[in-house]
Image 1 (cartoon, rainbow, N blue to C red):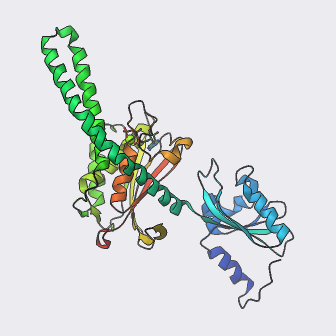
Image 2 (image 1 turned 180 degrees about the vertical axis):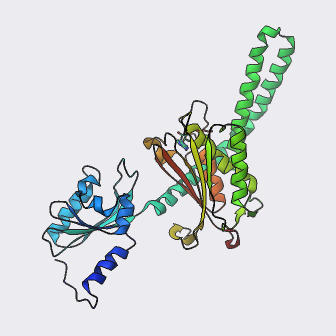
Amino acid sequence: MARQTESKLPIDTAALIAASLPMPMLVVGAGQELLFVNPAAEQFFDTGAGLLLKHTLDALIPFGSPLTGLIAQALERGASVGERTLDISTPRHGERIADVMVTPLPEPEGAVIVTLQERSLAQRIDRQLLHRGAVRSMHGMAAVLAHEIKNPLAGIRGAAQLLEEALPDSEKNLTQLICAETDRIRTLIDRMESFGDTRSFPRNPVNIHEVLDRVRKIAETSFARDVTFTEIFDPSLPSVLGDFDQLIQVFLNLVRNASDALPEAGGEITLTTGYRPGVRFGAAVAGERLSLPLEVTVRDNGSGVPADLMPYNFDPFVTTKTYGTGLGLALVAKIIGDHGGVIECDSVPRRTVFRILLPKATEGI
Ligand SMILES: Nc1ncnc2c1ncn2[C@@H]1O[C@H](COP(=O)(O)OP(=O)(O)OP(=O)(O)O)[C@@H](O)[C@H]1O
Ligand SMILES: [Mg+2]
């Protein structure tokens, strides 16, 4: 049984401590009813305390969740039990993975404290490294393919052009089709080759707002003519050290994807930037702590990334589009990785957010 501890603090202060904890904390009664939630838990479940306290735990966690078993175990042993990387995803709150600790309370009888430590960011960073691995393994393949396909392709295209001269007008569409298709394959190969490009590139301080403005202009005059754009920019945003053109490629791909997912009418894309110097991640990236204070998000109110695609949407060749290559997001992840940043995605229908975190220029990469 948990020991009763001496405290020099009054009861109210003890409650204040629970309320101030950065990790979500819930007190669950013997009948699974919620007795207490701290503000971090309200934020985690995206629901106010008033509403949460009317619920039982099973309204918050998926059916058959191991958390129920964990609570029973803690009560039986009369001691804290924990489990790492417990899946507490729900359709309402999306993919959630947390380390969970359950501790029995001396009273009321059968009550436990549940604390959660969300793992998403560290895990997503791990996953990012996997993406980079997948991308790297494409390097050799891309180089071989490029060499073996591009040359004969140029020959096929040239021959089709010669043939075209000898054909009557009514049949020219066939040779034109050959040319158009060879061009498409060439573009695909050019894109794949850019994965193999591991040369370091010149880095200059880049103003992300200029990048976003340019991308917005390109989008508004081409594929996103009927889309309403909103910009919420933080004027204090410092520069990022990087390559202007590559960053254009990143945001153009994200805005293009967002626009593809939008309904015909009422489509909205919101671009936001923010500076969060206090945020540091103790991520296991080369054992170093990451400081990625620049946050840029691309949000859309479109159909959302299909749930079964979510774990793979940064992988190469993953696409749901008839004419998609599935290389857009893989390329985005590579470029952001080359810039020392990370990208993550949260998506439910009507609200898809791609969030990019980048280091600021003076910190070097
Ligand atoms: N904003 C979004 N909303 C909904 N689904 C998205 C969004 N962004 C990406 N996706 C999903 O992720 C998949 C992969 O995107 P990615 O950009 O890598 O390839 P693509 O857009 O299909 O092809 P390409 O970029 O070559 O045209 C898409 O096919 C789509 O299903
Ligand atoms: Mg795309």
